Length: 311
Image 1 (cartoon, rainbow, N blue to C red):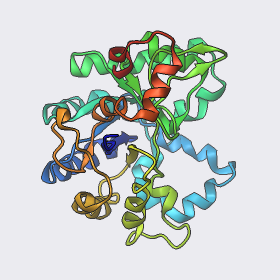
Image 2: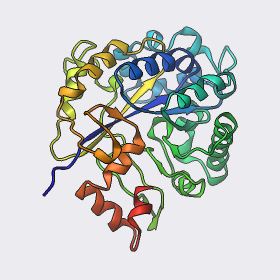
Image 3: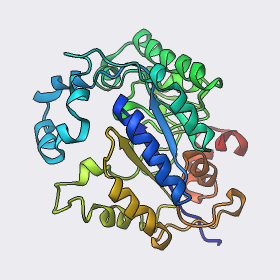
Image 4: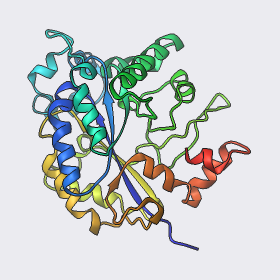
């Protein structure tokens, strides 16, 4: 039996106006320096980060704030957007920057329209609310890039059944809307959603730092060690761009050592010459060569073609 190729797919969830203006260009520069690929998922509407203050009474929120230093992470101005300051329209103000990311050869897609509104509201939202939020993002993406969006990664990994159905109806090739272990087709109340999901498989830096002795010095080693899972051919890591310098040195350290990690590719048709992060589209194509993922793709929908499964 041939050895299963391994890929590390890097998705960049861009949450805020500051993260878009300052963080994205620096991350693009870093990825280009090391010849790594990634999928950038953009917030395309207003930045209302300040409204997250309503989460203060949620279990675990205060602890996370203490561990990750929210003021340093986001910046004072960002924390006032949507409350004392009007939320800047990210897609409109940053259109040229967003297009430049695609022009540099990176895959782009939709993260959300209004990050805070989606993450806090989608769970109990009805079909009309959900459709409007997704349509706003889809229309803005087309306005900015001149082409339809082909992928979507939900803010905060939050979805509802209406959103799942819309991933198929809006014509996405695939999505990365949740967390899990392997690619799959969602099933909602017995209905198979014909848009494959490539879930995030690894924890984010803000979930790791401050837990079990992990800090900004050793978190990169820990994260790379998690990719050594011999039973999994593909891993998806979500980097969250919220501020200018967020984890830049940690990402640099990871990029330097990926070739030595136990993430192997061998995917000649994809022209991936070493075990570096790749975009979600490459992971999607490689997933059908993973026997375990293949069974999930083909078994989810009777009669589905291999070509559709890879789309």
